[in-house]
Amino acid sequence: MAGHSKWAGIKHKKAANDAKRGKVFSKLAKLITVASRDGGGDVTQNPHLKLVVDKAKSANMPNDNIDRAIKKGTGELGNISFYELVYEGYAPSQVALVIDILTDNKNRTASELRKLFDKKGGTFGSPGSVSWNFETRGVLELPAGSISEEDLMDLVLEAGADDVKVEEGHLQVLCDPPSFSAVQLAISTANLTPTFAEVIRLPKETITVVEMKKVIKVLNFIEEVEDHDDVQRVSHNLDLPPELLDQINS
Image (cartoon, rainbow, N blue to C red; front, top):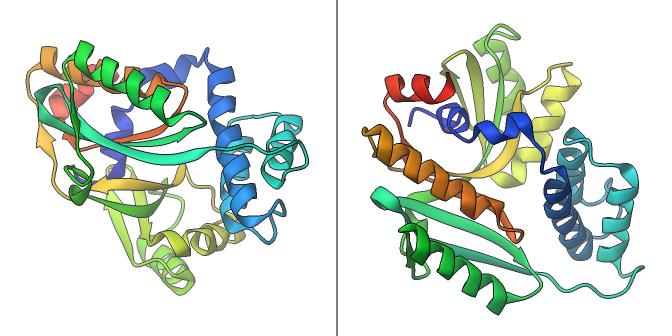
């Protein structure tokens, strides 16, 4: 996998016809609640909360929903308990998965995901079984023509980024998670709008699946896991040959 955008390119057509806004908002509300619980409800004093609120606003989540989630986290609407968990395992074709979870019932979530894995041909793994192959990075992408590579390098390195890559049709900025907010601010202050900006897990090594039937099975499996109410993110190490990627996106 040359970088994040190839992963984004296969990440799912369902985003284009998102009839699941309620589920998206519910997942974002959990993130906001946990961020405000851990660092307070003031976005100017809580960088993590600001990051999630910005993500919610970009998804057109109503301000009332955002405010309610913050108040749940600060205890103004009663005590809310969410557990942050990480599950690991394999999709079909031995594609490694790291699954970030937010749940109010650990036993229920584990049971439901185990059933899904068993039913759809996946394999649940033990802690550390695949996460060693992933690193957590801040990733921001901009259209290739929006700024020169040299100017972008000068802009973001000063803000704490550690690399800029030229990918297919865009520029990619990489940074450690603690520097993400500062890098994002530097980019927005320069009147640039990223096409993607998130802290994600990137695989160190990838696996290539070349048979279309197997690829579709893997993507459908990942999509079902992502659809679970308590799943916040599924990171994987699937790579695809360009010709298959073109077929899937066509």
